[in-house]
Structures are given as C-alpha cells and as structure tokens.
Length: 374
Ligand SMILES: *Cc1c(COP(=O)(O)O)cnc(C)c1O
Image (cartoon, rainbow, N blue to C red; front, top):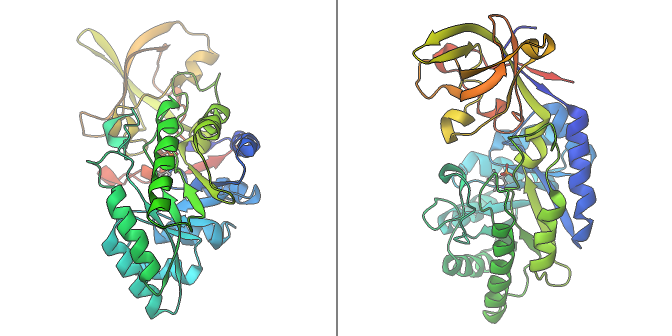
C-alpha cells in the first residue's frame, strides 16, 4: 500500500460509540451527536447513524454529507461563527434540528432567510461561559476573549429577540468550552454556570428552555492510547449528573468529536531517510504536517511506533521524527525512543482519528492521504 494513508479501526469506533451511549444512562434525557469536523469518514458516520447518534455540523457540506450517510436532518446541529447565506438556506431546506447561533446579527439573518423560504428556524443561543478549559490556547473556546458565542447579557437579549421574530423558534442554550479536556473540573464549572443562567433566565421570565447543549471537549489519552482506547465517559457524564440541575423535561445534548474518533485512527507512513545531525538523529517520514497538522498547529503529541523495527526486535534509539514539508514546524516528535529506524520502515502515528484527515491540506501540491478501513 502506498504511504502515507489513514487507517480506521471501525470496531473500536463502534465500541466507543456504544460506551458513550451506555454511560449516558446516568443522564435523564441525553442526546449524543458526533462532531464530524473531527472525522468525516463515511463508514464511521454510518456507524454513528446506525447507533442513533445525531451530528454536529459546521458547514453546509458537512450537513449534506451527514444526511447522505444516514443521519436524520432533525438530529443535526448546525454550529459555526460564520454561517453563510447559502449554508443557512441549505440547512433550512434540509430541516436541521437546530441552528446554534453565535451573534445577534446572525439571528436576524437566519430569521430573514427563513421568512424568504417559508420556514421556521429552530435556534439555540451559544453562550460564552468564560470558563478556562485548561487546554491549549488554540483549542480553548469558552473565554470572553475568544471569538465564539455571546455573553450572558447578549444571550438574554438574543432570546427575547428570537421570541419576537416571526421565523425563529427558541429551543435553548448551547455551550462549548474547548477541546482535549481531561480534568473534569471545567465541565463541573460549566454545569454550575448553566444553573445560574437558568435561574437568571427564569427571573427574566424565560421559562421555555427545552434544550441544553454542553458541546464537546472530552479528551483522550495521547500518551498511552493502547492501554486507554476508550475515554472516560463515565466520569464525564458524572460531572453533569452531579452538578447540573435540569428542569423537568429538558433535553441534555452532547457533541463529541475527538472522544469518539481520535483513538480509532492511525496515520501510516514510511521512513524515507535517517540523517545524522549534530548531536541527534533525525528520521524523515513521507507523512508531514500536510497529513497531520496537530503537532505543528498546537504542539500536540502523538505516540509513534516503528512497526517494522518492533517486529524485528531492533534496539531502541533516540530520534527526532519529522515530515518532508518545507516548514520548520513540520516536526512530529523530538528526542523520542523508537526501535532503530531504517529507510523503508513502516511507521504508525497513533490517535490520529480526530482532526487528522479532516485538516489535511494540499500544501506543496501533495495529494490528500487516502483512508483505509480495518
Ligand atoms: C469542535 C466542536 C465540538 C467537538 O469538539 P471535541 O473537542 O472534538 O469533542 C463540539 N461542539 C462544537 C460547537 C464544536 O465546535
């Protein structure tokens, strides 16, 4: 097989989806969505659809794709800070379950477009809880300084406006504090923040909130994915079960991306050259930041295995592992221990199922990597 390519363990993906569903039984009225920006592979989305999951989409193309993979439109949440007019129209025509709205101007535009095509848009307001998810700055989304969502004051205004507009129907609130969150404390904080907002809203006469959407963010074990292939859904849901006071009949929505897809994917690559630099050895792979940009973009770490060297029981040696792209940030790992590397060895980069293939680019005119199913 020509490298580099992605390979997905669909059995592990299915087991992870099952765990996410099974553990959610501790929540009265849970609805789970797959954030397909993490992975849009058709086979994976089809498994999610068959298990009854909805989808969290951030573009018109993702909406069309998810529907074609069997996700019912009414289980699709349409999120994103910059929805275009044509995407809004597409989502209305498809009949998506909810628009997660990020500003008052967006709410007004959605109302206008809905009126022009004779539809009513179901909407939730994305509120920025100003909670630090304690994760990397580029994947923290719930602080006031981020571009996402609206403040609590603006949210109350937006809800009043949504009630007054003729072609919007208010469903509830949406939140998303960030990604790769392993400490459950920020989720507990979010739950308590939601309790305060609900009190404030009820005091302001808003009593028709039927849906609370807490977004995604649950992290995975990038250091030891083989021992921990399935994230700790139990502890995650427990943070909400213990802290969130849902009103009778309210739905609680979850949008998992990474937690469902990261561990089922591997990027398979080949060692092109081993180069002796001053004081260290550099292994140059045929995969780079064009296939997997996370290390270059947010200093992410992925476990790397020399599959050939391991099979041949070669001794361990220290390497920098880099890609072939003409950028200094195209480095997968520095000073890691690997079975001795030789030209032609097959190298696996683990936990690459989330934000891997979906972020791949054509930089340097490289083709997008193919995807294989195991
Ligand atoms: C990206 C995103 C998610 C998924 O995030 P993960 O950290 O991958 O779980 C969920 N909801 C929204 C609104 C998002 O933007």
